[in-house]
Length: 524
Image (cartoon, rainbow, N blue to C red; front, side, top):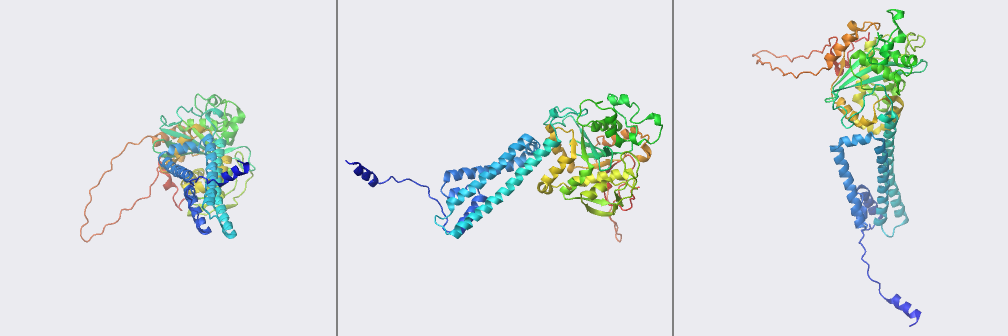
């Protein structure tokens, strides 16, 4: 048999029928576009309709599984989510996962459209389908990119501000023994909040704002204690090297019992490290450790960590969250300087004022001066406004704002914050912060008139007694029920009036009451 005959026989032989999966191709371009939209909303459904049943079922199962797992973890394993949010390594993995899922989603949409669209299409229909697929891919790519950028911003913030315990040095920080439950043996966490003023024209760094937040780790109830910037004779713990240098507190006895601005509390951060560099040993922020030790001894509290904010950039955080709402009870100066004290400029008048009024929405610039302004006002009024600013900031940090403005918040936070809080316990700190947001926040009045009418010789012993009494656990009290009497005929009953709470010196005052609108205040 010739080669040509054999070839002809092979060509003439019928081919075996191959079973092909039936596809559901759209008959029109508009229907193809609609089915493509369905495939984008239900990844894998387009592959099923296009005949790729095994692949489509796999993609659909994976998509549904990821949604269910995400909902389950978010609702029942909040600790795991918080741990991921503060772990640079896991955040990097999360970024890769977000990008990979976005690319896979786009591929599924494109592959589904190719399988669903009609075999023969007009040029207009093909163009319309391609444009719609392009819009879908763009709609997927944009949130994917934003999500990846947000995760990387969080990673950058955590890595820049919070160092691991092994990669940072502190002379005052407690050692982490149980990262999963660091508050197991800590009924109260004491956090030092420092506002550092290193603005233009000032010499050195002053900590004009010094507040201790004492937090009940079980309930989140928080007591805020403000320290006056002009306190002298700040003590140091007996076992501290600084106690040997300043056995009678931070002041110069040779100058006598007079005001000594270079020995004020707000000068310690800068002046002590300059006078005694390295006296505390290895530390990344000697000034903060100095103030921590002094505040601990003065208030009788073991201060665990500090958080330092650069006040000159504080307005960036406020602007990022869309401003804060506060009650302004009296005119608050914008600018102004007395021309005396450490770091002061020449004397000048305020450039303007924040006028009184209830529920005022302040941007970052005005919120900064609401907290800082002191020209013609007393230090206690300034401290109260600073506490009210913190209170307003906590109340303004709602989830919607954090999600939409997080990249701006993270960028500002990276520039503004310094702390010795280690990465290992950030998850526990976030959980504690959620408790604080929904708990009671009070201010402890240290009784200025009695304990520090001037800053020359504060009565730290009396202050410690006030603080211990204020934060001591309260014994539960049973409510007393008074018998009610029915009104006699012809008489009218008056609704009981709730008197405005009054705060005695040395008592704890709820910040919601302290920050309420009260135009009778003068700020003096």
